[in-house]
Length: 165
Image (tube, rainbow, N blue to C red):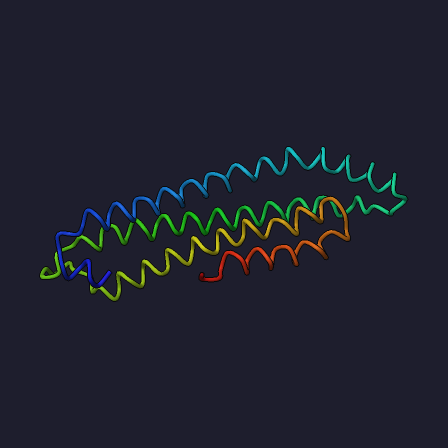
C-alpha cells in the first residue's frame, strides 16, 4: 500500500486487485446468504434421515434439540455473511482511499489505508473460517457423537490452509 501510494501511476493495478477481492467477498457472501434458506429446506430431510439412522442403530435421538441445531447452523452462515459484507465494505473504502492524491486535504495516510486493507482481509478470513465452522454444527444435525470428530477435521483443515509454505 505504501509503495503503491508513494509511486503513483499504479492506481489501476491497486484498484483491479481490490476489485478481485470485492468479487471474491461478494461471491462468498452470496453463498452464505443462499445457505441460510438451504439449511431450512434441508433440515426436515436431515431430521427424518437422522431419526431413521438412530432407530436402525438402536441409538437414542433427541428430536427436541433439532430446532436448536438448525438455528445454530443458520447463525454460523449469517455470521459468515456479515463478515463477508464487512470485507466488501472495507475493500471498497480502500479502493477509493488508495487512489487519492497524497498532496490534497482529502488524502489518507498510507498507514491508515493499509490498516483498512488488513481489516478487510481479516473480515474475509473470519468469514471463511465460519464457513468451515459449519462442519461440526452440521455434523451435530446427524448425530450427537459426530461433533467430537468434526473439530479434529476442522483443525486439520485450518492447519493446512493457514500454514505458509
